[in-house]
Image (cartoon, rainbow, N blue to C red):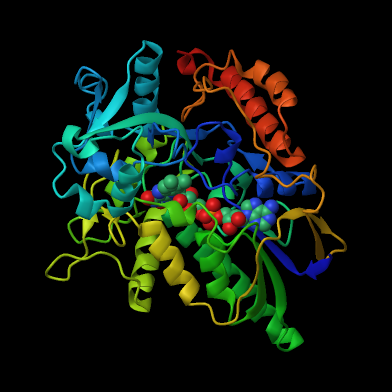
Length: 467
Ligand SMILES: Cc1cc2nc3c(=O)[nH]c(=O)nc-3n(C[C@H](O)[C@H](O)[C@H](O)COP(=O)(O)OP(=O)(O)OC[C@H]3O[C@@H](n4cnc5c(N)ncnc54)[C@H](O)[C@@H]3O)c2cc1C
């Protein structure tokens, strides 16, 4: 199957499924990043993999996240003896940046402890976290009696990718006509470690900017060429791809190609929400500073300013469009506190169903978007100065490179790259181990880029980043 397009937009999400323990949807295997790299797109910050501290420690639901909002609402990390593990580790205790909490849990596990999230202090847990409650109720083995004990077993796992396809502040890569938005893109706004709920905001803000850029292109060309219609290919139907497609549908011919169903994506899994300093008592500067601190100051400062500033504009636009953010009884917006934010500023939808409801809402705005489901893209090629051609994975071939069926079984002890690579002594051996597991070419490429970048970072940052 062959198709051609004028512009290509990667919105293919992160890499979480390359790791054995992860909180990601099955589609998240770094495909877009590998395809873009093969085309010659520059990658950046590939060593920055974020591990979330609290995945449910469960055989039945190995990829289930227990949102940071649970700690924001009063959940405390304890060991099997009830000892609070984060007390003396960081001034924000249980709400310290994710890499710090993940490392501490891992350290405790290495010392033989089991770690739990104690929710005794969380008021109206079931009402605030309906999706998590439903999962806990179904997991009779790992979560038996959780309503009495108030203890949820947790463990860290791969969660979010800060690195990816390098873009400018309008989503443009180094190849003319090729854009990247959302988690597969590297705008540098998350630095070495993403602040909670800044990712959906990144999808919204940089998707909006890429759409405005393309509108400017179309307007400029229409002045001379008379009503051209650009054919735009969007790869991926998560929040970034869906929002961007909505924004350009009136002036481009837009097709989304997606690997599974149009709801198979990480966006639909987001339990926290969207961080935004939209409340009159909040400040953009404080959101900016929290983002830099969480990112260990590796952030691209210009783009981070854009994220927090234009984020307010984008959220206002969504509110005008009727987006159902959670509200208080007096109809004011409700703000939740999440890890490493200095104040409550995270907007939710339906409690812990934010990603699913926001994604649904955005897709409900489509009027002219064509979606091709269950069609994983294998490659994108530039066939002349104006046109791109794509090819699809051959799903009939059992050993085809359909990432998702084959994912990297990285050793569970691969915690050195939690947030920031601090000790990469084991990294080389992963390349060998990767060779032994069944992996798609794309997954191998991305895993190797992560490893290579980790080793390079170690050399450039020196002892400061070694434990
Ligand atoms: C459990 C969980 C909870 C989270 N909670 C929050 C939160 O509360 N707040 C927050 O800001 N962020 C949160 N995040 C992060 C956030 O959800 C993601 O970073 C964000 O949704 C990424 O959106 P995206 O559109 O870039 O990618 P995705 O939503 O992952 O979409 C990627 C799309 O690309 C498609 N795709 C992939 N490969 C191919 C291919 N080869 N061919 C065709 N299509 C392809 C996929 O099928 C999918 O449709 C959470 C993440 C997880 C996993």
